Amino acid sequence: MKGLLFKDWKTLLKQMKVMLAITTLLACVPGTYLSAFALFYAAMMPITALAYDERAKWDELAAMMPYSVKEIVGSKYVLGLLLVLPVLALSVLSRLIVHSTPIAGENTMAMLITACLSLILMSINLPFMFHLGVEKGRLIYILLTCAFIVAGVNFAGKLADMANDIEVAMVTTVPLILLAVAAVALLLSYFISVRVYRARRG
Image 1: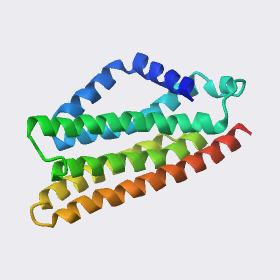
Image 2 (image 1 turned 45 degrees about the vertical axis):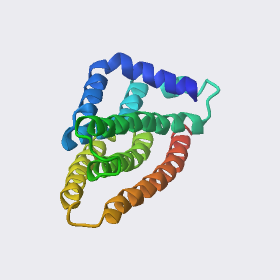
Image 3 (image 1 turned 60 degrees about the vertical axis):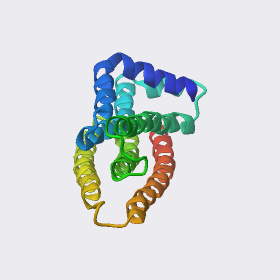
């Protein structure tokens, strides 16, 4: 799988160097909306990698190489995690350094919620993309992404606004529940993607 991840990373770095740099910059800016955009954009990168694979007819080449379906599919999920988690870490660190916010404060919890929602979005999108292809599934992808970005930013923002009026336990419980939901969603999505990709390859 390391080879597959290296391929995707080199492709993204070559084709989207500027956008990756902007995403990193936005993650460091201590603002909820900009950091949320960076997190969702990072979660969209596996779809972008799939689009480049599709254009290059990578599936045909991969069928002749010693990669299993689980490795090919799994590499996209791992790529998403390897991009979302550093962006989340940068967002949290920027708040700790610039605003000296507590590590378990409402801003950190808001970022964790947004990261979980971005991973849930990725888990919903990827099976569609593996089944339909990025070009055919583009409309579904755009609609889902827009809906999740709006919901994620509003939900995270409202939680931060209500933080002073609710118990601290509640502020930390919601992100933990969403983290569990995201983990289950990713696992289910992975197994669904493996099945649809295997069926697509015939």
